[in-house]
Image (cartoon, rainbow, N blue to C red; front, side, top):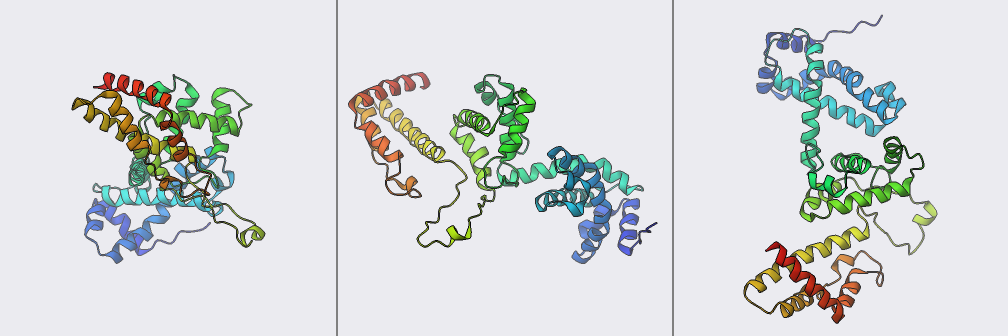
Length: 337
């Protein structure tokens, strides 16, 4: 039987905890003393976190090897485990202000609160919703579809974590399996799930500011997926370097047009309140806002392949289109003012 050696740091840690002085001591301790307490606490906290939290999560993910031992964990899974261990240590050294005679038992009792608080704190640092809740207006926009509501929750959860999905933006394979379980449709495939994702995102984009703050911003803070390139292609002369984007081209186009539309509505509202002729005001604002697209949002495309500037120019040059937009704009402003 292996006997665990009790170090001075371990004895000090337990003595401070038993007397209710651990948090106060840590708060005023020198860096060297804090490191000593960390080294003593890690062998206590690490196995508890693995058995009570990490193992359950890895089994749920289907990572049998990662669930068997810390030594067999994949690097990304090990990082998540260490994040949880650090969260529990952080909690211990700030909350242990009462006598604790059974340190392991006290840690077990604090596991959920410590890891949940840390998880929310990390999500907040990434700009995501700290507590994932799908807004009622999104649920309403999904017409009560149970699977799409689950997917909306998964999307908002995914954008707030550091994990990546290989060379893809979303964990499609996992969601294909989840869709099959939730809907009973065992014909679910990648194409179907991608269509479902687009359906949910289309609803979320109806409020551009919210979408930009809680979806685009945290998603943009993920590490960009890297795709392996064969050496023969990588070293080929003249091969253009193409970055792998975190959002699709149509997402960029739509975001740009929504921003321009918001500017146009504000300008129209001011002009109409000054008593300007509605048809003249709408037509002029359209030309000012959409007729001066510079193409800056298409600089990442090969010349001649852009679509946004060409489509906008064609639309405002068509008199029938302008008249239709005039009528729609006046109707919209009449409802919102």
